[in-house]
Length: 466
Image 1 (cartoon, rainbow, N blue to C red):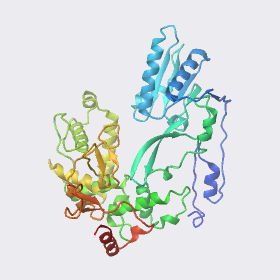
Image 2: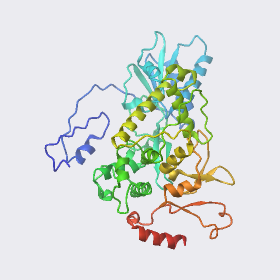
Image 3: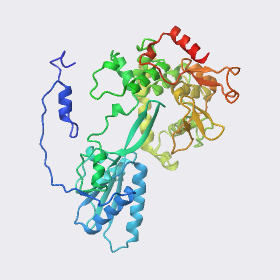
């Protein structure tokens, strides 16, 4: 800590963080401020609450374009799908007004957009026209766009939220912090009271398994009393410990295992890092290169994606191949960079890479070894249900279950014997008789439940399920 290392210098720089909060955490350290130029800002609100904030935002953009002095417009929306929809609607509405209306250059910007298209937002609009940049909240702090005179902000943002009970991450639309300066906000003034004064810290709304694994690797074991700047929910911490124990990254005393120490080296979520390590143990690697672009694999989405990568590799990483197959070259290059990084880590631990050829079962078993908590079974009525919580889920690109892989039930007990057991068909109900796998437990009853020895745990399981 800084108390024990007075010679250590930690310099935190930011244009948006709460400086007083950081100063207090670091023992009331000095705050250095670099003043910048502030411009006058006029904040206006709609007179009535808007039921459709997207439509109201687009109407506001058109009103500014048709009646306000020159100056570019910045519109904040929550994500890629919403931005693409807004661009399409705005284009059609402007087209319907006819050629007598000044041109409005519509420019979307989000992370998945190719860099050459993103860079267009920095170009000035042609003479006699105006540009509108439709962006996520990345444009609040990460980039600066010259010429912006008008900002339309519906006041919503999409954030990642983790439900510790069901062990799922989900993207939710929520009120953003109320400190953003805008010219026109599409919301009524009373709704400002619903806004949070500051965004919820990420550590309080995300899965902490990787964070806990990193802290354990640093020798920090008493996490419940650790001095977090923003303490996470206790249940989220316990769920992370449960997940790491089930992945065999922690032992019965909650200490890091040899496997856990290897997993901590990867910049990945623990299920992914274990999947990579287990892949070596199962003597499998990439599937053989394919010459033709027939990507679909009936065993699951992961093998299909791997086949796409291998076909790109067979083309010698050709951009022309990506264009011909409607695949984004930048995303494939990112996959290649990540693969090289992970191979370097595995090589450092002398993990031999041996191809499995077309033995897809080894690939699927490795995936099962890392993501057994996400297993679901077919529901006789509709869709699927997760084995752990019984949550209904459906296979669809816009739903929870994406990038799926079929597995054998017995692989669950092999991958996580402390988490699943084979059900005894003679002791369960007729409705459950056809099921082969049950979760061993869903959540811990007491804060220190994860510290129980194997003997005590076996006794308790026997009492619970016997």
